[in-house]
Amino acid sequence: MMLSTRGRYGVKALYELARAEPSGSPVSLREIAECQGLSLSYLEQLIGPLRRAGLVVSVRGAKGGYILGRPRGEITVGDIIRVMEGSIAPTECVADSPDGVSHCGRSQTCIAKGIWERVKKSVEEVLDSITLEDLCGRDGTEEANVVSEK
Image 1 (tube, one colour):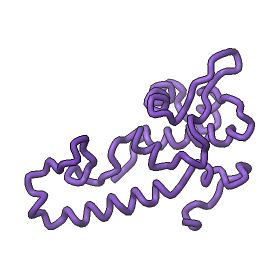
Image 2 (cartoon, rainbow, N blue to C red):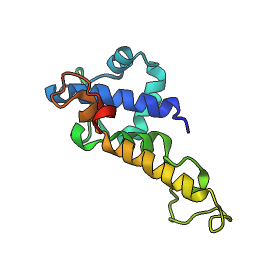
Image 3 (cartoon, one colour):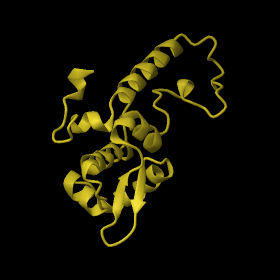
Image 4 (cartoon, rainbow, N blue to C red):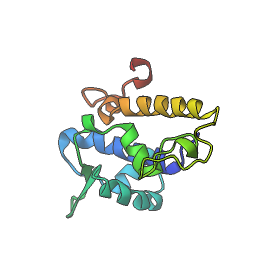
């Protein structure tokens, strides 16, 4: 399972907004792109889904830009990845479906389905356990070593 640039850029963009949260100042997409070394035009395409999901809010005006839609301690990496990538499932047979029903004809007899369910659950647990606040460090001044802490 590999994340696309959509997921990686989404996390990087929201990380920059989380770093700015204590000041309350909006951050422009240009600033985010420069700080993270991202393509501005691609970032412009990605901000819409994040805004529609309520993870970011646009602030209009000369000093406008974007701010987080919720406190950084309430937004997880899993939230961002789901908006940008969709299901976190490693295979189609364990992907989240709107109706909650598996659409695999072999789901009752598949020997590997249990493996893919465990992989999905493990990945979700890790991604859902890391907040933007964790990425910023508790005081917002430095990145935390979130992998070894969790």
